[in-house]
Length: 301
Length: 315
Image (cartoon, rainbow over all chains, first blue to last red):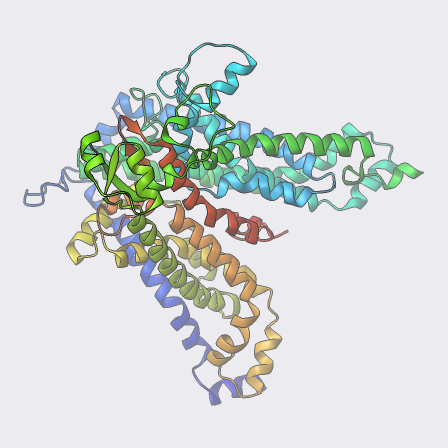
């Protein structure tokens, strides 16, 4: 009662304050995010070219969508994106979880080492792409030198060879983002209460059993969350790969968003590329939703 | 009985030492690329392209000089006819049989990164703090849906909205301007700012403001004078995350800006010397570009987890 009188007496009502506080954020998101999205969706049904503004825009219905879904090149890029995602997520899950398990054993310098290991993921992906082209350089690259130091493969070109280039981007992405899964898994491990292990000891469960029945199930939701974030990011992956391989050689590392950029900003097929963007967006949203449902089921168990 | 208290976190001395050893090796390996590029910045151009790669080399500031200048090659006769060099960097350039033609674009691009980064960070944290407070304290219809809507804006591939934004910006005169990029980065950062700050504000007890309001503060007054100061750590952490994002962003910068408002990330790869990329200058530029982020990471280490998961994992 006292509170209510107070609010009436002094200044704006809570409701007014709430809307004053939220409105600027919502307006900005509507103007710079939702409006462009709706614009892109409506363009996707036309033959619009952004570099020919004077030209009459024709409504073409679903033609762009049909064209894209029937195109082999698009499915090829989707496959490249899928295999990039598969290998990066797999490696980052395994190495990240492994590092987290090790870091969870408390030893001296633990915190300092965590901070050092985390550094790569804070860097600019585009700049990372640039300096890895130097490391991968077939004539003077440090990467090639170190690999040849351990086993002499002779001269090889990570970026120039269409069999090696997909691995080149997987290696850099894994180098950069493994700390991400590591940090999140570490939080999961630290959230496991000690009494669970004590109870397991009483029940004479051995180390392996404790790991399988206590550690893994507790960490799994955290790992899945980390992979969700990484999955969304890598589906959109653009900057690092553009700078590292620019999608080449040929189209060996041309991920979906790189192809999208070519259609939209080099060929200026705005209508067509908008349809492509919508398809990508629906794909990621659909997969994301299913994934979250599965994740929640696992969490509830 | 001794065994009972043993959990994976309190393992035996040997396994702890082994874990520490593996982690140290991993840390060293993972830092090699970064260390290497920083070292390359202090190599001469010739030393940056020798094979096998030189770990020990004579340090040179050629990379930094090349980063900040443009140069033209001149004949020996021309150089000899010139008055003696006035500065150490002129001398360095002349020893490569070149003269300084003028400053490079790096300084301007770096300044753009700072202006756009700080502008967008300030705006997104300010607006984000307001929205976060409202979401944290008041009953708002469809609150969960609105929060999810705000988060979902982060899922769009930047390229998907880049064309409409490009056309829109060109129409209203924001194309290739600082203001345009500040607004754009603010919007991209808002989802993170709102989610993170809501988490931090949820942790501030409501009693503080209620007490202040009984003392005569208005709701607004209580927010600015009581809640914001309480949330300083959270605001600082959020600001650093927003800054890092704007600092590192590439896709929008390369697609929407060209001359006036372009930031450093699209510029660094274009640094070329004679006959290819000038790796020591790229190393120098990369080093100057990465140092702020590394400092931020160390400052942030306690809040990293929260920041990278939009507040979903708090520890």
